[in-house]
Image: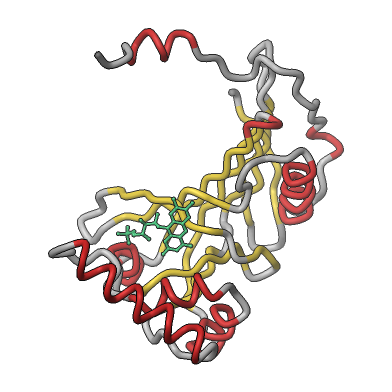
Length: 218
Ligand SMILES: Cc1cc2nc3c(=O)[nH]c(=O)nc-3n(C[C@H](O)[C@H](O)[C@H](O)COP(=O)(O)O)c2cc1C
């Protein structure tokens, strides 16, 4: 007998712990320092995997798609992640180089959304980014064929075994389709959840000369 989904859903709550306040009038002029602060606070508070993020793309017909990736960095150039250029998302990004990222850190009831055009890092930078990561990350990248139809789990087991051996033997092995992408933010929104549902939404929009900050109704 399965557990009743709707009963379970009704039993669950969000924002029923003590959440931090957020004074948007004290927020910095640019979004990056606030992102760095919120990210560090999520790590300090023990948020599980705060560096995972939902990456939304659109296919060539404009239909949306989404999946989780790891954040590799955030700096003046944008928020970066890595994947195979030959994967489904890689093909979508080639057709429509624009993406949205969504972070959620429940420990503080905080959400951050980032939207903007996507650029591709040069191959040397993508490979260097891969080679500073773990052997497992390199092995996973070496397996390749991401998003292709898998005929059998044995086929994956063999490819994965070979990739692990190669990653251990050759820590600088190239994974040619592995690519670092950057989302250059046009818009970044910070959402601070509130127990009484008076959530604070602060959005930064890029203009020709800098950033415009606005509050949004929650
Ligand atoms: C926690 C987590 C982290 C992930 N990180 C990455 C990543 O950094 N890069 C990546 O290509 N896939 C990552 N994946 C797998 C993707 O979610 C997705 O399954 C894969 O990239 C294929 O997506 P696509 O078919 O839309 O291209 C991660 C999955 C999870 C659950």
